[in-house]
Image 1 (cartoon, helix red, strand yellow):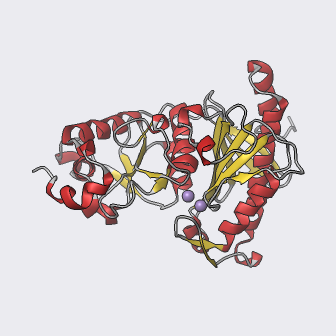
Image 2: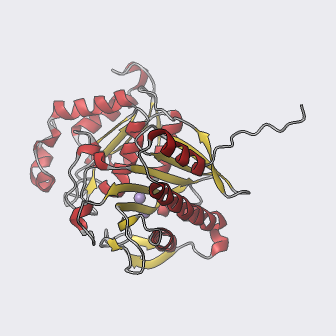
Image 3: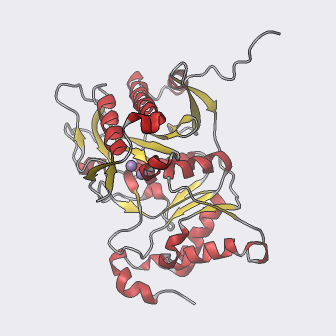
Length: 360
Ligand code: MN
Ligand code: MN
């Protein structure tokens, strides 16, 4: 009587400290690292939330290592991530979508044992149209005996991740996190400036009738993907015997968040559009952290042929085909890839042999 019901009192910090006590796996240092990532995300959320008032919209007039035009906010968000995380003493190096080479921790700061990999602003082409964007991060252990990590030290398969997560800057700002014991979602309470646990133990249903793919690339798809999508589109009269919905936001974080909240399957498969690259999304700071979250929520994350987390990375900014979400749908897509033997040739051969490979 007369009490206001408090929805949740568990902050992200409390959650991390309690995890630390329960599992005895992490030091206070690890909690400190996540706290700094959290602060970086809050800083980015503040700028994003101001929109055109911040004078930070538009292009920066530069390109990143992938040859993509950088938005002003890409550069700003990268700078926020670097400055907020470099000083704390937990990191030995960072790798970002927006920096060509790994970033060494400046000499004036102590060094720790972790590596931080991030996409500081995912979906930044959506910024100017006020659609949800996000930040994605992954934490690895630095190999022993390395004081100044180079590219090779970051080339660890996703199974080695200690922690991964994303922040989504939508109508509300959320931080979704895994440390390898399930997935938990926190919503930013702007008045008190804290992330509160609002979505404990997120899971993904194994079945779905909703898929997400950029259909404008359909003429470049491999036969397995064509077959899968065609079967979905055939609806109730087709081999799947039910109707499907399609969604496409063109923002990996927003697509991931939808799938974690209500299920679905996402595909950005490798295709024959550009034979010089093996997919669109980046393995180390997009596919691996998202894949870790999806698998921890009971879903499946794949290249189309094999689990994404088992891929041995070859380069810091490597791209890869990425299919994830509802377990049974992703397994079906993998099965179709095996049936059509799409992976028997390497990407550079696509242009010559690929054209003749489409089975009837
Ligand atoms: Mn991105
Ligand atoms: Mn980005």
